[in-house]
Length: 572
Image (cartoon, rainbow, N blue to C red):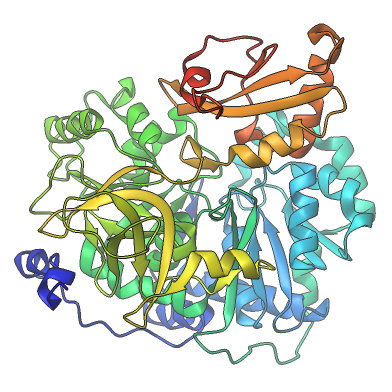
């Protein structure tokens, strides 16, 4: 049996870095946290979007109007509301407005396929959806199969400055004119929706407890099947003092809002934490290298948070070659393993451009909102994902027995602490498998990731228990894609694997065995269409390879290693 110090050896690093482990967590709602911050920093800029600024006071006022508008369309406390938007001011406003009235914000990726959207709507039983206009056709097609009664739409151009908005519509808007005509007949525009709030005087602020459900984020769960992850107000609010201790970001900082709001880190850290302390957020609705370069040069954000592929692009930015980056103080990578060589290149790039920051690698899951461990400032160990956040505990357990293993031995990474989820939406059996009470009386999140812990409490990720592909920082679960492929009448069997990609880290590849007598040329297009209808754009296979049979290992299991190393066929 380990001693208390052995159970938490990372506490020694806390002493070195001056990190407190004695934290208090707010029992307030996310809206109340934002309201307090907005009153304290009302003249600070909360959001900047293509050069147009919104102060904390203005943001709070718009949230209140939006909250009243939600009450005017009869959204009640506890009801789930779909938000399917990129990073825009409207998405932030709607998120906190939903929270203010005691409803639950269900965050959906705008690139989700029709079938996924239908599943999300039915799993949440949502009757209201706030969506970006280019998603409208997908919602329209499946609306009758759901309980959806009201769709509110907004363009990404709503909050752009006039000149930028004109350019946007000139270059992209013409493609959406026909959609706009249909939308006008069957949904509420953002502007019309807010008018209802301005004319409504009903009470709208709900009283909620920290343990109440606040957000649903969608992920693959531990089995790879898409699941809604139920997160409470406390789950998000517990992050606030934890992030404060680990990163020392203050109201004088500004953050580049690249990670999306439907991503745990993007919502929990880059948005909620930032707004809770008066930080300025530069919102980017989608990533482009040119815009990224321009934002760095002209806005000078002090904090950058992204996935490894962002930093691959960062160090290759020709437009930053002669730029002084001394203003950058905090750089964090998450969403996928950061290769040691890439860390060295990023650190060198920052140093060569006069920044004292070093890239810090975080580790976490949506099941605990976002990151729950990070490499410390003063003692980086190559290959490590760092030490647990204060208030969080991590241990390595034997996959079969669930007993804690010795330092240096491989096992499943398990997490306990206040950011661990309530459970899976409509997934009682999977929740029981993932959240387990151990002999110490605590609830532990079984991550499905394998790793080791050294005697200093540093965690080393080694591999995954569950099959998973990570492309551009997004989790892709092969089993879910295989289920869709195997529903095609001409497919006998299929396997989905990840293959190495110099930019995305991995890309998705489908290996297919057709039924006897079926020709590849006759069915390839219909297979692609099936995938496009049911799989998110970021998770679509980039390769389709056809085989007479799937390779097997000596004991008869599918040989994934061989498939991952096979050549390209029918690449998109």
